[in-house]
Image 1 (cartoon, helix red, strand yellow):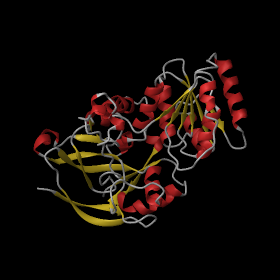
Image 2 (cartoon, rainbow, N blue to C red):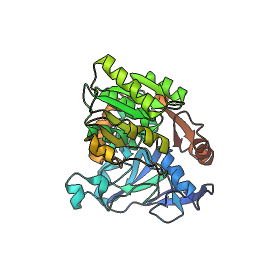
Image 3 (spheres, one colour):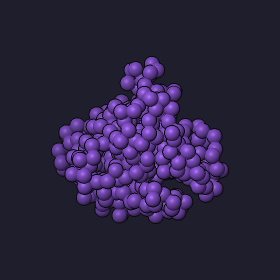
Length: 355
């Protein structure tokens, strides 16, 4: 049958996205999702600027934070029609050796919307039926949220959720989040929800004020302060609160070279450094610090689909507050929104909503 709609496509680096009519058809193991909302991530800007190459040849619709309703499905997925879903930002194949061992984020056959396949800057998206995260509409309504608003669960919530889970955050932990906007803001909330005392570090006073009301026990404005001064402030706070001086859990969420240097400089004995943000910037560090502190560093590529329901539960149970961190914008304003994101003018995560 197929569904008619349109996409906003990247046709060349640094060129405005171009609107193009499209027909969306599902193969037997695929679904067509009518998009409720698609979040705008700084990774999209990396593709648009040409700093990061997409796996799929251009033209390509960007966007990997998608929520919506299944409106058509292939023969193997008919039961999903009518379901409200979140599309994981990384869709593993589910059958390879890595997937069978629970390592779907390193699956060589994974599909990422807006990178490997056409993404969510569109009216519809065609994706594999496997791994979609169902959304209970009644719980969504009780939480006072719309399906469009929970699009950001696809990446901005689940990616730090995966990092927090893997780092081993638990009651009594001291979690330090470098970069409190976007992904970092949700990292603060998730670590707080799981029982940690949380320190948030940023260079934006507005972000720090917002996150202070949503889970940060200490906020530090890094402007004009070197890493040694920041580390001393955290150590004094930990001593005052009776928190450990070792085994800090450090989450680098800024996606900047400066943020990465700060995060690495906060290593203490037994620390865990989780790199959540992405940047093409290069930094110079003394790698031997990991050895000397008996510390560990973890990369973090997305989140396996099997962990999406638990992350979504935190949102629907209001243990994570989404509304203050989301801005709904019309899909057809995508070029203006991307330009605003590039100029760091957005106060929240922009979610594009088809008319």
